[in-house]
Structures are given as structure tokens and as C-alpha cells.
Image (cartoon, rainbow, N blue to C red; front, top):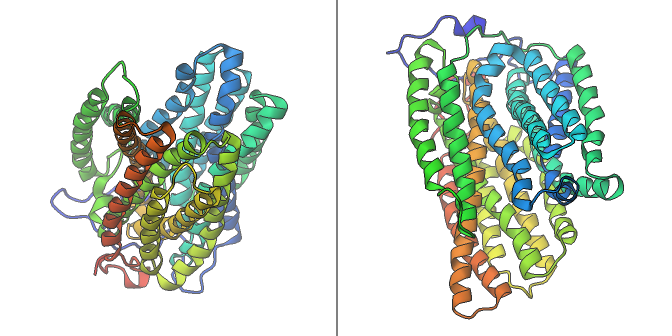
Length: 507
């Protein structure tokens, strides 16, 4: 941003990150309200975010008819999901620089243009190769949207109302994935798989058109050029790590053509180079992803809590359907309906938690939240093939409500501890951690389940009970992991307001 990034701090002088200053044009009184113009911008970004995340979760149901029409195998078809995930993992780390370079308006137009173009290309794709390309284009736009949404909220919303508005972000993040498979199933059954994209396209184009008129830059732009070496390093590092973690989970079930250790090793080594490169470039405010955000103790603490919670959440997301379908014998649609109330409840509770955050701060909400996630893991560990379905419903509701208590306060607290000029980099870092933690959680839970399941099968246990036995071990490990989040949360506090800027983020 021109007004703040032109004059870079000397390399030997620390940059304050814990003391946020008021965003441009933002008043600091407790009676501040979001202006009508900014309210409309935030509402449009929320609606656009809902659409792109909804689309992200539609492939699971649409994949079988795609395989039939295009004549591909299941392993080939999975690249529609894998390519999307890898693109997200590569693009998200660049959004810190991208949002500052293009500004709010430019980033929104780019995100929705890419998403709309990818959606149209997917609907018209005559073959699998073009369909994968379309998903990559879609993912490129999707990756920009959530960091853009969080950065804009932090910039235009007065500090004492951020919790309430961030609660709506949680609503989008939770409800869209919950509705995606159900919506996709209904559309595919009635109209075919291409209709999934045709239904989304006019909504995306409408958002793009309205946004082109309505959205304005909410902060000054930076003129910093893109560091191509950083981009290359980020692509190899984050792409390698996410792919390697995903392959690690798969390798526990069957042999892989390439050992997951290869992409994991390459990704880790290149990540070290990427970090070194950013540490050098940030001395002149030229980093692709400014790592000074981690100097803010509240941000680092929030990212730690978020990482542990994401590992547990994504592990549960992958294991619960396996238990419902393969051990308890439920159909895919039925298992989806069992899990739907949890996603809806989590989303609807988001704004309520946001309001409470504005009143009481993060710790009274996050502490019972992370503890509740641990208890939910133990409830899932009690499942057997003969358990009543309502037990899964209750455990999933407990997990979803607990996560709702975690996400809004953690997002708001972590970003609220940064200077406004670092909001975009903080949002990019949080989204990057979400991708890595999600892949790690999936790999960890699947690997533990598989190892224990194989041992039980070798000992003569029947397949359904071997599966739930493996899941039990994985969920117990998840509960133990959440102890770390509880310990971190005991040190969590509200970030300093502009009136009291400069206070520490720890007790």
C-alpha cells in the first residue's frame, strides 16, 4: 500500500505487529457503525464467498456421472478434486502480495472473472482434460476470495464490531460445504452433471457485474513487483507438501507409484528456501508472503489453535462418512443427511458467537470450544457398527457447535493483532495454514485408521468392527491432540484496540 509500504523499515529495526492502527477512513469510537457503502461491499463479498465455496464441494456427488459420460476411471476422476486442491495451495500464499498490488476492486474482479470463466469452461468441456483445466481456473479464483473477504472486513469494520461480521464469515465457511453435496445431488439427479456449473454461472456473473460497479479499494495499493523466484518456490513448496500429505493418507490403504516421502521431502526443503527468501525480501516490504505477521504473538497463538482444530476437523470429515457407510451400512445420501444438521448449526451459530466475542473476548468462547472438540472426538471413538445413527448425529452436532466457538474468535483475534498493512498477508497465512492442516489431518487420521484396521483384520476381527476399531484409535489420538489447543487457549486474549494499541497478546 503506497502510503505505508513505500518507506521500508531498516533491516535491524523490528516492525511492530501487535499494535494495530485504525484502518484508513475508520473511526475509533465504540459507537462506530459500518457505513452503508462498506456494508454492501462486505455483503457482496460474503455472497460471492458462499458461491465459490459451495462450488468447491460439489464434485464428490457429480463424479460418478462424469466418469460414465467421459469414460474415465475413479482414480483419474479424482484429479478433478486433487487439481483444485493443489491450485488452492499454490495460489493462496500469493494473495498477500496480490491483494496489496491489485487493491480490493482489482482482486475481486480477478477472482470472480477467473471463477466465472472456469465455471463456463467446465459446463462446456467436451473432454476430461479441458474439465481439469476448468477446475484449475475455478480454484484460482476461489483461492483469492476468502483472503480478500477477511482482509476487507478487518480494514473497513470498526474493531468493536468485527466479531459480529466475522461470524458471518463462519456462516459462509460452514453452511456452503454442508449444502454443496445436497444441492449437487439434486441437480445431478434431475438435470445432469453439467447443470451443476450452469446453475452456479449466472450467480457468479451477477456478483461480478454488481461488484464491478459497487466495490472500491478500501486501502492504498502497493506498487511492489512480483518476485518470480518466490512464486516458483511457493508453487513447489506448498504444492509438494499438500500433495505429499494427501498421498500419505492414500499410501496407508494401497501402494502409490511415487512414495509420499518424495513430495514431502522436496516440499519441506523448498519451504525452507521460501522462508529464507521472504525474510530477505520483507526487509524492503517486497515479500510475496510477509512473515512478520508471526511476530505478533496473538497471531502466532491463533494460528496454532487454528492448526490443531483444523487437523481434528478434517480428520473427522474424512472418517465419519467411512464409518457411516462402510461399518454401519448407510447409503451415501443418508450419511450426508446425518451430517447436514451439524454444518447448518455451525454456520447459524457463527453470527451469535461473533456478537458474544465483541462483548466478552475470545477466551471464554474458545476454551470451551476446543475442549468440546476433544470431547466430540471421544464420542466418535465410542461408535460401533451397531451404534444408533442418532449417536453420530449428536456427536457431529457437538463437534460442529464446538468448532463454531473456535473459528470466529480465533480469526478475529489473530488478524486483530496485526497492523492494517499486514492484514492481507495475515489472511493469506491463515488460509495457507488451513490448507496444510487440512491435508495433515486427513493423512494422520486415515493412516492411523488403516494401520489399526489391518492389525484387527489380521487378528480375525470382522471388517465392520475392524473399521470402527481403527476409527476409535484415530479419534482418541485426535482428542489427545486437542489438549495442545486447550493449553494454547489459556494464554489467549483479545487483541489491543486502537485506543489501547501496543498491549501484549499474552498474559
